[in-house]
Amino acid sequence: MSRLTTPDARRKWLAAADHNEAHALRWWASTQVALLPVGRKWDAIRVQGYVVEEALRYGLSGPIMREGQEAFFLVPVGAAATWDQPGTEALGKPSYLRVPDPLSLFPPGLHWANLPDGTLVDPAKLRAALRGARPCP
Image (cartoon, one colour):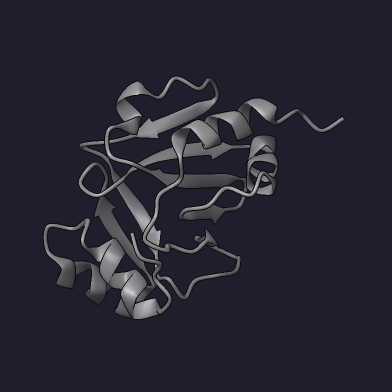
């Protein structure tokens, strides 16, 4: 899949998850956050706590959203159905997820740790990153 390089291309790619792309675009324009269905174009893995920092240091590619000590990794559709990593939550159909505008790059609030680029996070690599995470001393 090609790399997305502009905010508009990223918005269009993300909005394709909605039943009505214009809906997501309107929400981003007015609130910087859109509520999108999970399981149409991607699933998501929710991670909390100390493992967030460790997983982000692993250098994963693909879209990753963050808010405080919580992160959401966008993974291929179907990955949630077989996800079994302890301490995480897999989101597939019929879940919905708050998704920040591609220009939301910094805290506070929901923002992108890794911008959408037309790819998804590899679940095997995410699993490896999470298994390698250790509690801080």
